[in-house]
Image (tube, rainbow, N blue to C red; front, top):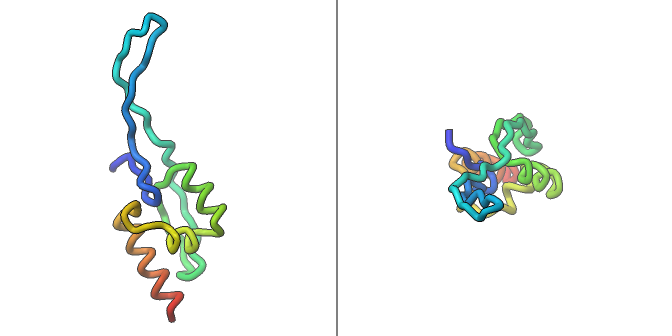
Length: 94
């Protein structure tokens, strides 16, 4: 399972640990991923996703999963999220 947010595309970053003596060793900065179940109002069903904590706050700020998916660009979404976005568009059009 990749360490990448399914909604925002946020992933692992790399950098250095820097000691007091300025010795540098490589390290990884991992995203704060959480497994959540979000309710889609257009689909009337829950959706399980693995997203970052920052993305969870953004989803709540934008007014729910459906509003977030419709506003988010397709290149940052995972294939699962793209499928959900397609279903939401079809449900809202009907």
